[in-house]
Image (cartoon, rainbow, N blue to C red):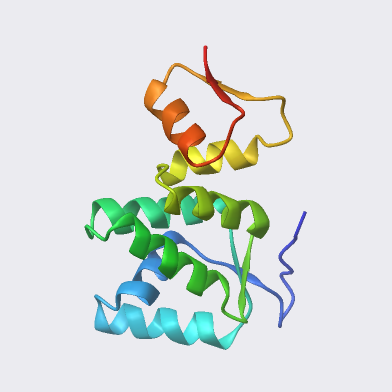
Length: 139
């Protein structure tokens, strides 16, 4: 588990709104502040924040899922950014780019250590199988 240090020069955890401002540049002052902070010092992004950023960009900004996935990959690759469970987030983005809802893709990748993933959501099971995730099945 990664920890954030409260000491000077340590890593800061950032919230959804900073990433949204960084990516969209939709608010001149806040976007500039977000860019200065994120580009200027090490930041930590929790998986829950990534999930919320994806949802906000798709639902509030109407960005296509493929554009959101691409933007999140670029953001996560910045030298100052550390994403919690980065490999799992990357795997979820892979599944999302193959047609899964990102939240569902994240559920699947986060439960990869289990024997399978069971749901009542038939659409999720079909999409998971189509994307190459065989471990999903209907309850």
